[in-house]
Every structure is written in structure tokens, then in C-alpha cells.
Image 1 (cartoon, protein in one colour):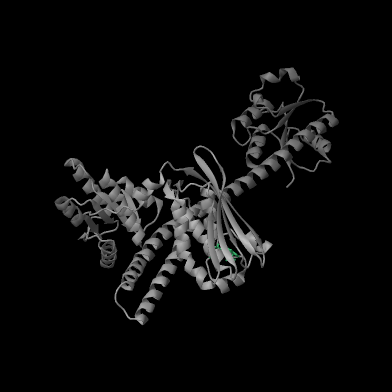
Image 2: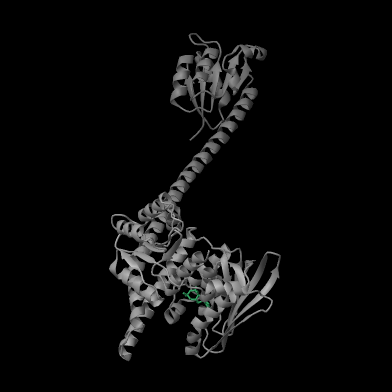
Amino acid sequence: MKPKILIVDDLIENLISLEAILDGFDIDIIRAFSGEEALKFSMREDFALVILDVQMPGMNGYETLEMMRQRKKTKYLPVIFVSAIHQSDLHIIKGIETGAVDFIPKPIIPDILRGKVRVFLDLYIQRMRLNDLLEQMEETNLNLKVAKERAEEATRAKTMFLANMSHEIRTPLNGVIGLSKLLQKSEMNDDQQNLVNIITTSGENLLLIINDILDFSKIESGQVQLETINFNLRNLVKNIFQLLQFKANEKGIELCYHISDEIADTFLGDPLRINQILMNLVNNAIKFTHKGKVKLIIELIDQSEQSVRLLFRIVDTGIGISEEGKSLLFKEFSQSESSITRKYGGTGLGLAISQNLVNLMNGEIGIESKIGEGSEFWFRIPLKKSGILEDEEKDIANHLPKSVSILLAEDNLINQKVAVLTLKQLGFNCDIANNGAEAFKKYVSTRYELVLMDMQMPEVDGLQATRMIREYEQQNFIPHPAYVVALTANNMVEDKQLCFSVGMNNFLCKPFTEAGMRGILKDVARIQKK
Ligand code: ADP
């Protein structure tokens, strides 16, 4: 669209002469014969410029400008006055302070008018371009905002979905794994034993996959919080290698580790997560190695007064990874080649999770590999030095309480059975409450040392029951409050925070393991000692 110029004069001959001067500009010229008409047109259309005669019958040029300046649409519309008035008298014109006002004396010198018009037109064109750009930017911003809101909404929905899925899947899985493990220990013939073993392994494998998916989503949505607790690195590694030894034996490959002598036994950090990373990497190394060996080497990089940096190297003589494969490795859901999925299975999440965890610990992870020769996965992490001496640590780590009064609050019959039998295996009995209200009642009459509290129960849920117990303890000045542990299939950070906020002491995620339960009992032992 061409820029438009409004020319205003009561005399047709002046308008015609103006048009003649402006001939040659690529513009549309609109005529107005009075100030009133000029106002009307200027409200209706967008003009680049108004050339306005001063002396007109009715509304003169100055009054017309004043009116224009009062209206939003024409407040900044550039105006050139055509008048015999001298430039120094311009201050008498109202509205002139808004700028965009110029002046050309009569008789008009064509070149001067053309020069001024050119300047205003250039300004107008630039302003239009800027407006276009602004509009585009506003549109892009709007689109981005909508897309961002949609993405956030989707993430929220995904997190919610995962929390629910986590609960729905883990609860029945708790029953399957827990009961089949207990069944494994009962009298059976070999065939039956074999079948039960398969059920247990399948359940455990399913749990591993579900945990991977949940873990990854939790890390992705910032749900993972690292712990800083005392742990024994040598024990941790020993356990991993004990667990994985049979896999290596099955494949006929050598599995070994070496921890540099200068490295201490205990550190402060998140042993569960370090265990998870090592399990992932050593498991992969065994999985992708068919002959030769898999070795874990832990070296000290450097240390300060309070912390150390350790280098973990997992070296294998396996199939190796191509350059192209390496670039995909740490991406979620990707495997170095699609044929790998068919041959070896897997979700392609292990390395993505490991990388995220190492990053969370402020460490780095990497790989060196030659196809056909083997791979070396490595990671470096900083760890805080632990003040605990080895003997103290052994003492704490291995101590189960001699006796402890336990209340299990759980409405699901299968879960009750799993918990009762797991406790029995460890040599403990417990009383059972079928809901929160019953739990509170039983607590008041017996004052248990340990309460295992399911979160979701009909009527009074675990949170409410815990609140009631804590209130009761406060009002009655109970010297040793119960150690209350949430039993739940929801493994999200918010759930944990919620549990702690009502006064629970710990959190046991279903399906829980014997080791998990043992850990809780050790905590109780530690409290009894105090
Ligand atoms: P998954 O093992 O479940 O497929 P990971 O994220 O742990 O997922 O591994 C991704 C891919 O990286 C594997 O599928 C495999 O292609 C490759 N990979 C991992 N570790 C090794 C290894 N030690 N040797 C050869 N390839 C490996």
C-alpha cells in the first residue's frame, strides 16, 4: 500500500498546485477543503503526512492541529503548515510541543517542500517497518507463551501420571515380589522352586524397568534430591560385585575391581545413587562383553581437607561402540544401534540416568571405546570426607535392635502379609491396624516404638493418623515418641516432604526389600541406644 498524504486548502488552485509539486512521489494524495474535512479524513484513514493551509474560513490550520493533537489516532500525525507566518511565531500554536510539525512559507518553493515531504515519508516508511516487526514479534511472543504453557501443562500432567502409575504398579508388584520371595524359602520340589524363581526374577526385572522410567522422569522434572549420608565405599562396591558375579560367571568372563589404597573406606554422599550408577555401568559392561574381562578401577584424583575427587573407570573387553554410536549414548531412550535392542534388550535409559545423576553430584562422565576392542566408561565425582572411623561405622551398620514393639498400619491384605513375613524373616513380630483410626487407638493403648504407616488408607489416612499420634505424644509428654515410617508406593519428593511435614521420621518405598526394612530397624536400634 502506498503512503497517503492529506492536503488541506480551501482553494482548489492551491490544492492543484500542491499536487503538481508532489508529482513523482509514489504516494496517494487525498484532498480536503476545510479543517473540519481534514479532521474527518484523518480519523478515517492513516496518513503519512498532512500539508495544512493556515488561513481557511471556519476552522483555521492551527485550530485543526489543536483538535488533531487531542485525538489519540492523530496525536503524532506529522503536519506541514503552509502559511505566510514567520517560523519564530510558531510558539503561539497549541499542540506544537508534540513535535512532527514543520512549516513552509508562501509562496512555496517546490524543491523545499519536496525535500521536507521526502524526510517525512522516509520516517513514515521506517515507522511502518518497525510496526510490522513489532507485530511479528508480538505474535511470536504470543505463540511462544502458548507453547510454553502447553509444555508446562504437559509436564505437570506427566508428573501426575507417573506418580499415579508409580503407585498403581508398585503396589501389586510389591505383592508379587514379596510373596514369591517368601514362597522361595518354603518347602517345594525342584520344579516348583524353578517356577517360583522365574516369577521372582520376572517381577524384579519388571521393577527395574519401571524404576528406570520413573527415575528418569523424576530427574527430568527436578524431583531428585541427593542425600548426604555416611557410607562405606568398599562395602558398596563389594556388594555390587557379589550381586553381579553370577552374571559374569554365566558368561565365562572375569569380573574384578581395584580400589586404590590411598582411598579411605567411608565418605559422605548418596550411596544409593552411586550404587545405581555403578550398577548401570558394570551391568552394561558385562552385558556387552562376551570374552575377556570387566574391571572397575577407583582412583584418587585429588583431595583437600574436607573432600576428595574420585575417578571410577569401568573397563571392558566387549563389543565396543562406534564413533556415531558414542554421540547418541547419553541420550535418553537411545541405544548405540537399533540392532542392539533386538539382540540385548534394554530401555536405553541407564546411561541417561547415570549421566544425570553424575551431573547432579557435580561430576563428569565420559567414554572411550574402540569397536571390537572394548570400552571404558568413566566418571569423576567429588565426595565429602567422613569423620566416622571404620569400627564405629561397622558397629552402627550391623546393629539390629534386640527387641522392638512394632505396629503395622496397612489396609491391603496382601501388603500386610508381605510386611509381616518380611519382619518375621528378620526376627520381629508386629501388631496390625487396618486403618488410620485403628492405628491411633492401638498406639494410645500400647505405645509402639516403631509404626509402619501406609499412606493411603480408608477413613483416616496415614498422614492424619500420624498427626493424631504426634498431638497425643505432645499433650501427654511422652518421653520417647514413636519412630513413624511412611510405607508408600508414591516415590515423589513432594510425598516425602508431606510425610516429614506431619512428623514422620522416615520413608520406605513399596515394594520394600528386606534390606530396606533392615535399614529402618537399624535406625530404631540407634535411637534406642541414645
Ligand atoms: P540399555 O542398556 O538399557 O539399552 P543404556 O543407556 O544403559 O541402556 O545403554 C545405551 C546403549 O549404549 C546400549 O544399548 C548399548 O548400545 C550401548 N552401551 C552401553 N554400555 C556399553 C558397553 N559397555 N559396551 C558397548 N556398548 C555399550
